[in-house]
Image (cartoon, rainbow, N blue to C red; front, side, top):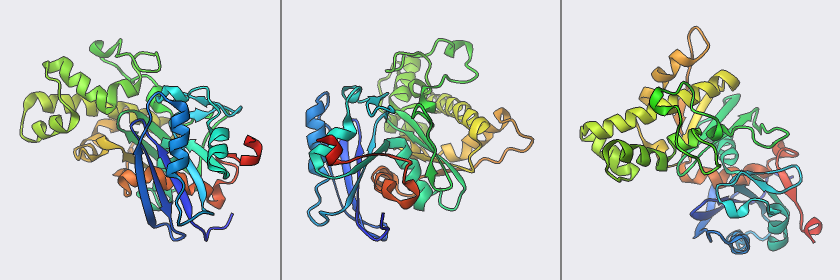
Length: 314
């Protein structure tokens, strides 16, 4: 695959589908977004095909970041956009676009973007974390996504909260049906729900953050509980894969105190004499998902992402 061509990246979010056209030098030449047709699989496929049709680059490659992942048989699993689960999304998108497509988990695409030319560039191993409406992760080593036979590498959002206190022992119910998942503790909706349970106030995360900055003790306590849980989860990741850098993305990555408090909270939980912890915000922000999807067509990714062609979809 030539490295001197345009690439299209699509990020299939729960509320919006975004797309970007990357020039050969990696700059964003054009981008667009549309609302996600919730609970409507056929409309979702049509929307992706429509948003990926950049007239300026009819021969561009198409990479797609999706919620969940594909089983070895090509069916969607574990997507919090639950209407996708069980579908043959790759086949259907190849048919709808009339082009070859490559698909990978959206958090994997985020990690690939930041490892390629973002906050994780020049590091051998990168763990990318998305903290937003959900909690996802992706692992890149030597410029390549690391996946496994179950296609679930990096899914730390559906591991249990480590070292729970007595009050945390049962844990909230996650959309996946389990209780106490990291996603149910550290996502944006989870932070709002925890604050509501503690205070009775139904507030969105940005308001909680602003109140904490103004010295509101209840808001500060909510952010402290959240940071403690996030630190415990990330310390577990470090103990398993020991990445050179952890890059945070998603809406919650803009909470500035993370980068000051997380390393100190994590150190006592890491199995090393002098833990080295490097946590950085994403360089490309909201564009990282679409950029990483576009980079699925890098030569280094040959065989490391699921590919589908219109001929096979026919």
